[in-house]
Amino acid sequence: MAIPGYYSLLQRGSSGPDVALVQTWLNGVRDACTWYDALKADGKFGASTQRAVQEFQLKNKMNMDGKVGQNTWNVLYTRYTAKHGLKVPYPGIVLHTGCSGGTVRLVQQKLNSLGERLTADGRFGAATAAAVQRFQRYFGLTADGVVGRTTWQKLYEVYNDIANRLLSSSLRPGEYPGVLRSGSTGTAVRELQFYLYLMSAYQSSIPSVSIDGRFGAATEAAVRAYQRFAGLTVDGIVGRKTWDSLYLSLIHI
Image (cartoon, rainbow, N blue to C red):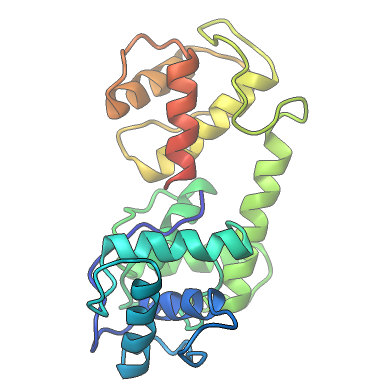
């Protein structure tokens, strides 16, 4: 549930937080056999970053064009998380009004999962800045409307804390609990509602739901909306196919 989705092609001359994140990932996958020096995560795609991308592509048997398209982005993320876990590191530069990219969209999505209703378009505009300020004020941070290291880390801390509090301690995350339908209650329904709540932050066609452990009309409507989005049979019932699809969708966001 962490990956910032690919946003646009990054190449020599590109700049911004997505470039800084790529530089951080490249530093994170270096080993004793790496040729390129550690990069400065400054968000500027220059010659050294291009060479590092080319070496990464060579080692991973990819087209060695020195550009970060969707395939290089995804493989790089996979290699980084294999070593460091799923948490997305702070990209290294401040996100502010005027920035754009997958890292901005990730911040928007995390804010949405905490109650905001931003358009997750990857563009850091006035609405995103205002949402960041609300988050900062609530948690006692400097309300400057920009996402530096402290705000980034607090955002993930709060998100993970909510997830841990809401999910069932009797189930492993993603473990299929059996069929859930209108009238079902309990911790498995809470877990379902939490997943639907997160998906509603990423897909505007899926309505937000309350996490109360009761499978009522609102939860059924959200399930039907997800099934339509995912191309599943739209019956409002959560069988294994719907459950697994929902969980895997969140993992790969």
